[in-house]
Each structure stands twice: as C-alpha cells, then as structure tokens.
Length: 166
Image (cartoon, rainbow, N blue to C red; front, top):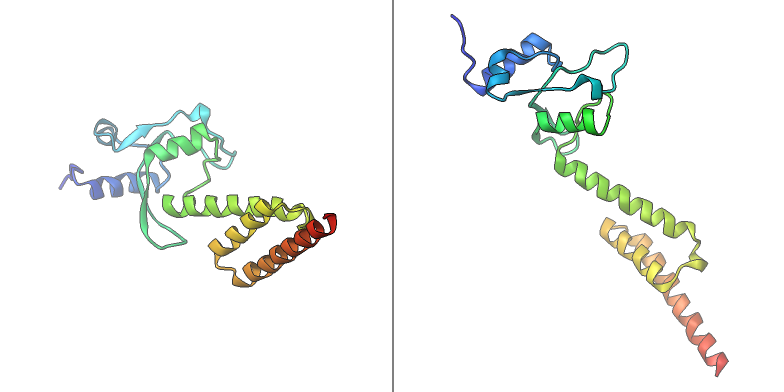
C-alpha cells in the first residue's frame, strides 16, 4: 500500500523518517503543499560535523519549563538559522510564551543589577522604588522589607537635613 501522505501527521512522520528528523531533505509533496520550505544554506552557520538544512518543516516539541506541546515552525527555524545566525545545532526547548517570560525576567534582572551596582547610598528615591517594585513582582518579601526600611531611613535622613537647614 502506498500512502499519499495527505494526513499532516503522516506527512510529518514521513519527513522525519526520511531525515532522521534533521530537516535536511523534503519530498516533492511536502514542498508543493507548503509543509516544507526551502532553506538558504549559504546563510546558515554549521560546523564540520553537521550539514546545513536544505528545508525547514514544523516540528512538535514539549516545553522543558511548562511541559506544554508547542510547534517549532518552519518560519521560526528559518528566522533562527538564517536571520539570527544561530548555529544549526540550536533547537527550541521552550515554547514562545516561556521564552518571552524568561527574556522579561532576564531584562528585570539586568535592570536590578545595574541599580544595585550603584550602591544603596547612591540610589535616588525613584531608583529605590524601582528596586522595591521588582522585588514585589518576584515575591521576594524579605528583600521588599529590607529596601522599605532603607527607604524609611532615607526619608528620615532627608527630613532631619531639611530641619537642620532651617
């Protein structure tokens, strides 16, 4: 019996069987129906141990962070390997939602590092409030309490300096 691979699951299994899951080759049917898109191997970074992708196709993955099933799309693969110049060995291990959350966490962590790098004595009221806001968002109650006490001391000090000037 010859399978015409009209079912998307059969097509995906067909491509993975022929490629060993590598995305290096695609059948004519997959190319015609858009299940696979041609890759531009000249725009890819690959090592001498691996060959470039000739075609990209959608693959189903399980996110390591949230365990949801997600699709690593052929368009996203093209973007990763040709536009962003990721090595072809790179693979999506997190869904887009988790990647977005992780980038936001990293951005906040960088912002916090910069603020704390100034030293507590050099933080403005606005900076100190931002530090507190970040820790509130992370649920770090001990840090919030500590920086609130620093904030109170700064306000007391500022108040006593104002009285001294009068």
